[in-house]
Image 1 (cartoon, rainbow, N blue to C red):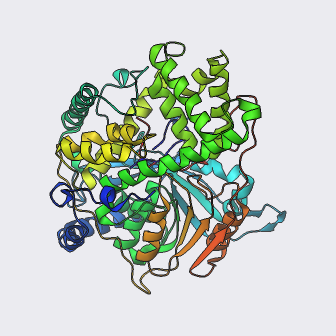
Image 2 (image 1 turned 90 degrees about the vertical axis):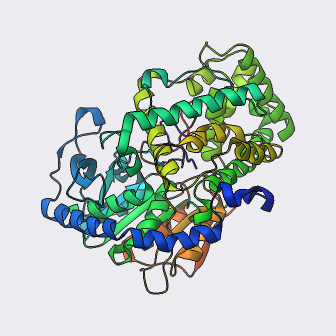
Image 3 (image 1 turned 120 degrees about the vertical axis):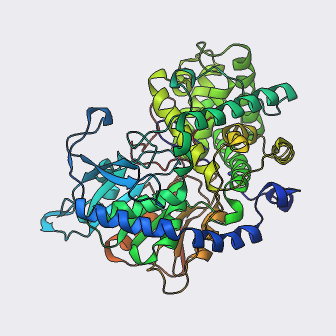
Length: 561
């Protein structure tokens, strides 16, 4: 399942019973009962890992983290300090091979932003993960510069890190980054059999490349290990209990953390929650994501139609769709600037499905292209060779984690059947989502059974779930499911909105609930609602999306294909 990043990303609402539980899935993917029964076996088999985590955490608490100047390659300002924490590659062997995770931090300011003379008591470290899998949180401490985060930055050290496999944290690679960006590419909505065969061959080659390049290390890139790493990081920071904000995929391994280490939780914010039901991880979550993006694509087209006077794309959603298809067809014949084909266009428009502040940017590019100026579209959609290493690394980690986490259908006929059905009513993103995840059908590392995320009454302190009702990357049903599974959790819903990652965004109501929770431990009743933030204003220029920051977006549960 994928979510979106500011630098390059994008990423399943509910399907009908037929699509959500595809025919033959009892043998092709885990049923709910099978996954639930497997969770007990998983718990028993994880005894060695539990002991190993305790050993690694005790060692990290003793060693701490030596923070200093960040490496130049991190491209971080001097106000941020960096260090590393040592974790076992395999928690069943805590004294075996070790890897180092890079960590970034800005100390709590201790000053009330409304009154600089008033001191604010420090509450410890606030650790953040932006999602992915495959995204780095190293830039997170910069978020304390934004007005909506300054009260939190006064009380907490802001801590980001690169999870295992990401960036400088024992980086994973599955193919030569020089061959990774192969644009311009096609993106057929209803692919031919010949095209499907081509993509199957590419998926097999990618899975083979992961196995050959990573060897036996490949099996250790999992969500469970990400949760264990988080506990070692907690200990290394000198925190008895963890305060954590996880966005998108970060909510999933945050929920695993809450299940594995309930006594180590202080406060946890789950922003745009992945559905943690073991039967959903990850094949069915991706089906649901593809279905949900169809609704979010409709939201964009309705908005563009209301602003036909600005963009000229059509005064109805259907006419906007036709304008988009006209652009696709022209790019298929002649890529813009020799760089942007239908595949690059699709990736750019998918970002608009994540964040509505991209809507004016993308609408302007479509409008300008149809009027004879391709440059705005090229600027927004072209691939950049200098980013190839980072993007290939993100995709490698994304696939390693999700393919390792759970069983996937291994018969192409299952993928073809389920997604052909789905594409009839949700064509916008369905097949591109398939090509992103298809290497999991041919994966060469052992598959795990997902842990059954649960917390009974009194096992956890109150936790906070934030969700937008029309979020496509992590459909709202996931927030409802996580709410049901964690006793004492409180759900705050942004109604009739679909931006992915709403913590610290433009909605003052949502931010008020998060501040009250993180700063005072206060939560509303079992659930609360906020009105949607205002829609973006139409603009005739192609400047950067409003409100975007390097640290301010949740990252998809999958990178863009």
